[in-house]
Image (cartoon, rainbow, N blue to C red; front, top):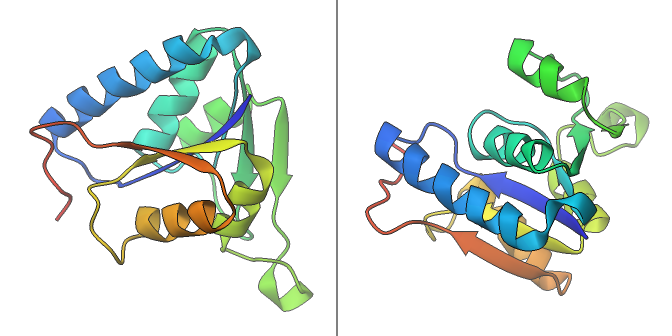
Length: 148
């Protein structure tokens, strides 16, 4: 099973704790030995999900936008990825920084850590995934605080 991840960045400490718990439960339910987590390793939910997949014995694949510069945390997870998909720059006819279509095209379903508000990055990915007919599991815990 190939499961993509998208989510809000900059979540409060309380929301982080709640989301991490829900992601851990989802990964456990998937049976991670057969799970391949796919994402860009953006700070927050994407990294938490990747780490949960690895901690459960699953594998991760990473989508790297054109021109992305990895920080130490991303580099550490990149080193554990079974595949790294580097997107070609838009100037060369590639998607550049538009990881949405690449992600949706590589997964069987999507987890979205999303507060349900339109116009955000996660909202755009959810819309694209639903248009492609993917099952979307929205994770937004009771008591979660929307990012500023």
